[in-house]
Figure 1 (cartoon, rainbow, N blue to C red):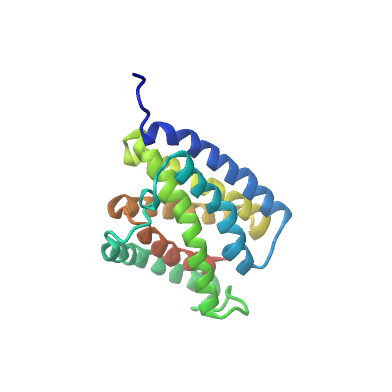
Figure 2: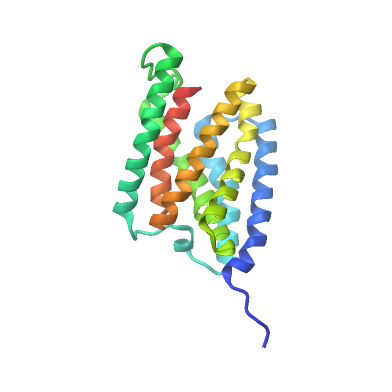
Length: 220
């Protein structure tokens, strides 16, 4: 009888294919198009990022949403962990904002959007990106390598790489600013994977993402 492959053996091929699809496809999207942020994060990104991912998980892996950390288990501990680590990012954002503007200018990069709209966009962004990178890529790499640290480093490098197109084509920052931005992206990736590994609930990474994204917005 042939040996049955487990999920980690099967999934690594899909992880590579899925990331290549995201990096190339989303990179070209960033190069060629720029729709309003509400449309991008609320409609386009869920379609481009999540629909193919769900097809892989449900049809190829024969797994359920819980395999992506979409569960009610450990919900409240997950939120507490996110708030604890997220406080570090909030303080970081306040310090960066103060040194950049000489005071705490909270409306500097929100523009004409209401704070509630900006928070909603952050929430929608966090859902798509955290399910993809922590719930799927990190989780599958951790199973494949049976090594959390290695999986964290690899998935965080991929997470940072996926932000290069937005740095070049959308933010259009100079080299020093780009290095700082991508460094913040890398640090967050390490932290998000760390708490997801502890909680097994994607809510921890989603809430942490929101708390991290606001220092990034203030930093721009």
